[in-house]
Structures are given as C-alpha cells and as structure tokens.
Image 1 (cartoon, rainbow, N blue to C red):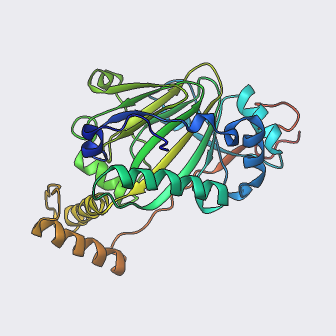
Image 2: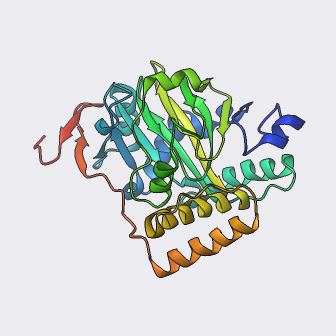
Length: 308
C-alpha cells in the first residue's frame, strides 16, 4: 500500500530535479483531525513552536513577525489559528514525537522504493497550521522540499532557479547564512512561475533552491513541509558555499557545477575546510519576539509587555 497513488516513470526519474505534483492519502488519517491537531500542539515542545504573523502585501516580507504562544493549550492554539492571521510552524516533529517519526519513515521509505538510487538524510517533517488568507513570502530553502496539503486550500508559486528570480550572490548569502531565506520579490515574476493549487490530498515538490511563495485560501490550512537532503543536494549546497567563500576571499566569479565533477569535489573539500576553520561567521537568523497570543480572544495579538 502506497501513500502516493500516481507514481509513474517520469515522476520517479525527475524526482528531486523538477517541479512535480502528486496525489496522496495522508489527509485521511485521524492524526490530522481537530482532536489530533490539539494533541499534537500539546505534545510538541513549546519552546520549539514557531508562531508568526504577517501583512497582506506579498512584496512587503519585512512584515513577517515572530510571536509567542504563551501558555495556550492545543485547543486554544487551534482556535487562534482558525480566528486570526497566524502561521504555526512545528519543525522536525519527526525528531520529537514517535508517531510522526514513524510517519516520516513511512514517507521516505516509499520515496526511496519508487526512485531508483534515492538516498535521503537530514530529514525534517514539519507541520504547518495556518490561518485563512495567511501567506509565506517569497523565499528559498537550501534542502529539497515537498509540501503536502492536508486541510484547506493554498496556492503555491514556484520560480526558476536563475536570474532575475534569484542571483548567484543572493543564493550564496542564504547558504552562507548571511541573510534570511526571504528576499525582495517583483510581482511581474509570477508570469514565469509554475503555479500549483493545493487541496487536501495533493503534494508538490520542486527543484532545489527554487524560490517560492504561498497564499492560503479563505479557511484554516494544515500542511506537511518535508525537507531532506540527498548526496547530490548536499553536493550542490557545498558548491554554493564554496563559491561564496571564493567570491568573498579572492573576488572570484564562480559558477555552480552539477554532479560530482573534479571541480565540484574540489569545492566540496573547500567548503568543508572553510566550515572547519570557521572562515565564515555564522549569523543566527532569529527574529525577536514582538507579540504574544491573547488568551482571552482567540486570534488576537498582544504586543510583548502588554498586560492582558
């Protein structure tokens, strides 16, 4: 029995290197009904829970703000997501809760069975619980990503990994952790994007480092965001890292090599050496906590220090 019902030779061959849509059955599992989500929010380590809000303009990514859930129960947190404009991000649930660890193992076992030679590691199965009309701004991720829709509807725009959507310097800054994954967006770029409308039982995965943005429909959304690495993906990340070091240290204008070519292997060694010698300063991209969820009014936000 498989989770994804529409594997075919093209999808299996292109997995990890192309933007692909699939059907799945995870939305039918009881762990994602209201009771299951409330239990998840109660069981997940509260200090790991990401609570965010954002503005309505897709260009103004600086309105993305981090908050605190305070002592709200799982039931109250779910009410807040249903009533407000918040985005709850539960990263690496597979590392904290055994049943989600088993789900992650199940998902990746199927992927590796369907895709010849696929080997995955650095697996991060996250759960996203987000409000009606909430959005995630234009950004990119270093690992490979698949987004599984469980409840609600959302639209996902996925852009090419090239100029003007993302330049080499911007990509290096993100891999070197000099800046956040979010960066400036031009709405005219939508014309060059692949657009996916996700409903329960749909999943999309895209090329590594592809910029993307997300807008929810007018209802509560629940999704799984599954990040992972493969040997090829890790090689690419290290090549980009090495390129950033070369650009900063000697003013080089390096290109990104695909595959395990001699140049790419040399850059892999350079990246590992640079990390070991700490040639690049690591910047912790932690947003300040600016609000807390109001215990008395689901969905309402209180500025930090405000007395309820």
